[in-house]
Image (tube, rainbow, N blue to C red; front, top):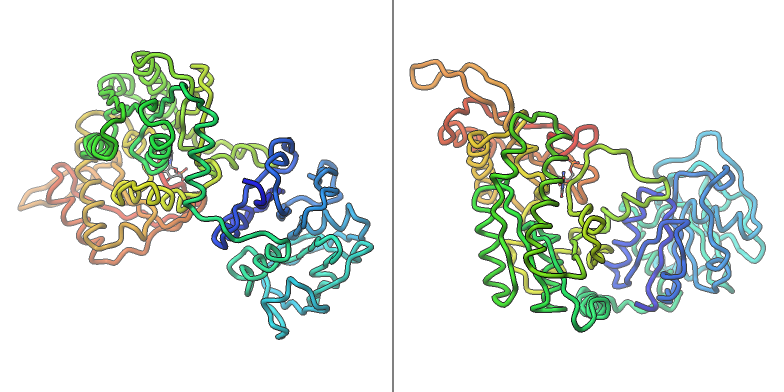
Length: 514
Ligand code: XMP
């Protein structure tokens, strides 16, 4: 995709926002973690570079830098925060380390005209958002200072000849006034065209898949019923049609009606598609018997999944490629310049498969965010009820039953969970929460039902708002809805006499309980 934006990621928590905002403006952006090989990204001929912020200090040993080929590439460049400091250091400016740094709002005063300030129409100051430890004291030769704040002599700088800009503040965050417009001004000045649409992404992705797979290649795709694998399959179906084989593993840990819903929807949508449903609940449940430890559950489920998938795949004959619905946040987490993030949970996906089976991996969604995947799905004609399903973890209900997993607990949790989802939909809130589900607790408590004593189980309800599952807050659901959950679950799910609502945010809690 020539003429796109290449964002070099120095580890800022806001890097994803840069990509999201520029795409929302109609410019395609890809993110490359600093230090990764450049040949591939450069061969795609980007039209501009954005250097992100980052937690390091430019002068500390091992701090990520910028490849000389990029610095000398002649591409228009925008350095944000760390990115600006790096440009200043590499091009001969002067930096100092601050004792305390500056975090939060600041008042930016433009000090010289610049194409970047065109959204201001000559009017006054901007409230901007800062988050930095170092500062640029003197801009490099050839640069002019175009903005300052009461604390910073060089809050924005520009080399008009080379179209290189530096901003100490973060235009990509919501709290920076006119931030989007500033990004747009840079991109317009760089001569980029705002012509990127999801439809062009779909078209390019289909062509790319066809090029990779060739005229005879066969592709295998593990369907989970979730948005990501559904949209990946829809894209592949469009690209290679009957040479795509989907395998849906029913591990016996799915939600009520899930296996039927997913296979029905797929068979209706793509009647000519080959879809195998592997009914393997027995295998999974027997291996999980008596296991309480969350990581052990995840390990067993992950291994069994690989076994079942391999067995089903081998029945289909040789396939050369394996398609996965890996999203951008999954990619970035595993290759951030800070190294892989600490292991919180071993997330289950089909990541172990390509290595074991010698497949070539196809990940057509790896530069997209969840909301973009939904947009792409709509573009491809995937029905709304599939696109708006809440994320559901690979290990399924097993990690929502605290303690050992058995058929009775699964049946009980399925009923409670179905009520939660049904009532949320009835209140019209299923799209405004990220996920809502029930968790079965290993707790019994005393109650009174009818005139008798009950000693039943407790169900917790978890509902969170989030944009990417990296952070989440508990959803402020209306009290009447919480009351509906409780009344219906206690009345309709035999064995439950107590319902709790989880009011923990992530961090420090995670979304799932295990
Ligand atoms: P946590 O619990 O880590 O979850 O806050 C973040 C998001 O990931 C989902 N999740 C998983 N998804 N395989 C998946 O595909 C997994 O093993 C897994 N574990 C958690 C979780 O539902 C939430 O959306």
